[in-house]
Image 1 (cartoon, one colour):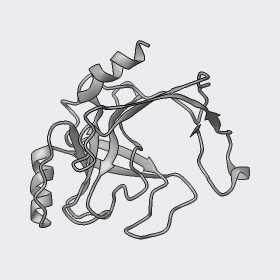
Image 2 (cartoon, helix red, strand yellow):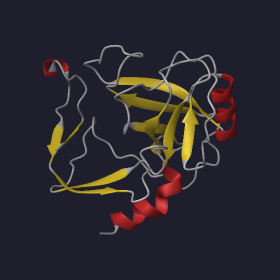
Image 3 (spheres, helix red, strand yellow):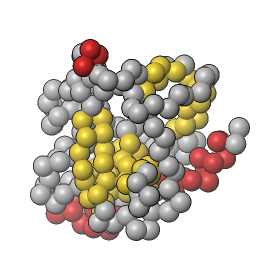
Image 4 (spheres, one colour):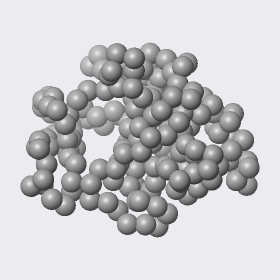
Length: 189
């Protein structure tokens, strides 16, 4: 079962729009997923019934490329922890993060004392000084970037990080544009 359009897990009386639940018919995980490196960390879901779009349930675009994303603002959302070992929020959280080059991301982790290889199947976002980040429980959530036409592209899927909002430890997401062909193969069925 997947719930879409939820905002406040604790109090639905304050929400302007209702959520929708959909029964999942098929889950397609990437066959190359590696639980040690988190490479190929994505899956597609097919529902038994179509989704009805509403003001709180809108489609997101699969990006053609992400050539021009470095330096742009991305948005990550989720109900993950508010900080390392912190509480879980009842309302959906949103944070803005600048998109980073992977080599810069690796250098940042090195400055923090970690040796991480971040191949092009990932995309990084975060601040050198920390302070904002996704956290435990946000994995699988979206990293979106606003396009020039006002719509949003799904640039990444929250995958991993070391700690939450620490200096030189940005979030690492699965790079959706890298998997465009794989996604389109399954969208045809």
